[in-house]
Image (tube, rainbow, N blue to C red; front, side):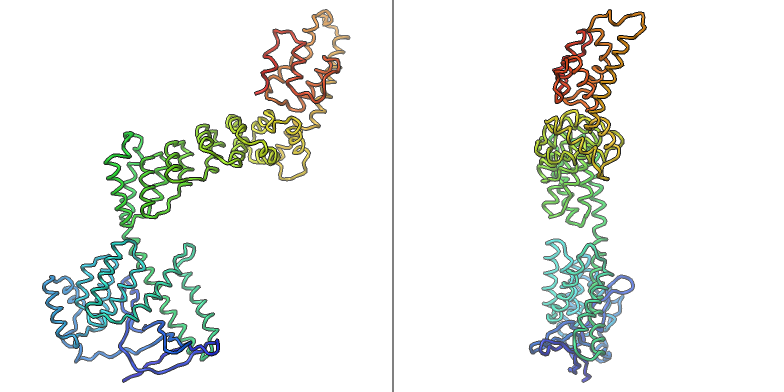
Length: 605
């Protein structure tokens, strides 16, 4: 009886080395590989990839057996070509059962040729891949003992690619029938499927392709073999053998993945076709549609398509959220939860808020548990969508979310949104982040600083001295990160230097006016006019500019001019720390009543 070689890895005092032994030949084992047409064929040169030997530290790494020559005495009368196999596979149940009984009578002599086993293996693999259990069972009755063991391996390997409970039940029954018909090489099947399962697990990374996986595994194998002690030729043979097993396993994974993709493609398209009308015409649904029979029928249909392999639930879910199809969003949420599918509720909330679909937003938060408010809130604040901003605020936002939304509105000069958000941001948050808020608003502004001016006019820190100090700090800052436009704006209008320039400008104006009053050659003598009119001629433009500026605080330059005017009219009794409200009151007291636009008490927002 012809012998065969065996490569063994033996542990010796914690180390490893390769030895070569001789064993008697055992029955030929075959494995499955991809053929050129994408089908599965029989690879005759692989057998028992990782089987344990008796004794601690010993492990059979790989076995090889020569091809057994066909014995005409054994195969004569039992060889059937591919056409005959296909013909038998399509026979009636009665004919198949009759052949099974005849096969049982001649069990010892039953032996298929190698080509027949290859063809039968392909047919069986196709039936298993397409989940045609009835056809697979009919092929079992055509198999000889060795082919039954092949079929057992094929069926057991397919378990790692199943997706539903019915598929698992079907393959379980098929395995039972294979065993009942005579398959008995359980060790080989268990070792082979264990190896395949490990490869399937290793290939589940979404960041690495199958080709990259093969390269990494080959590298790891090479490193592992370098640790072994023994003949270099045996190392090379062992490496080639395991590499061959690995490539076979990865081809199996690729084959099953392609089968699943082809199967799911039709269901995916059907799922999209079912969702499309519901997405477009959701606004025409009756108010009670979601709880009616139609919704139940649609939910059942979509659920069946998902079970069949549709993989575009999240895509349709996002589209439904974008168009505001609240009913469909609710249905898809239920389907995703029932089938343990991931749908991006936070991204869907962003789509719904962008298009101001309030009902859909409520569904996503209440039923989908969407919690990512910051992004949609900031984008709504930037766009000036008051309805969406108010909805988020009423739902409850964190302090930092409100602060960042205020910054976004300020940078986009959405003054109305900023005015709404400002009272909702706690003062301690504003005080801690005041400089960063103004810097970020200036950096992200698109040429307009109206939002920054609004915050300063509104005394956003509720402390005039603190608000002015923040503006002056940024104006004097050497930080290159501060936008030049913002720095120039604050330096010109809101800094301490601007306040001093305002006072100087007011003094110059007073001197010039007094020169005109005393030395003017106009036919209308200003000295002869009533004093309120004289004061109006001198300070009415300043008064109107201050009223137009509005807000709780005036820009520092304007406040300096107003302070100088009020000091002249009040005989120097005006405090330097007085703000616009008090200073305007002094000026209004000396102006003719018919020129006063509004009481000074209304200047505060």
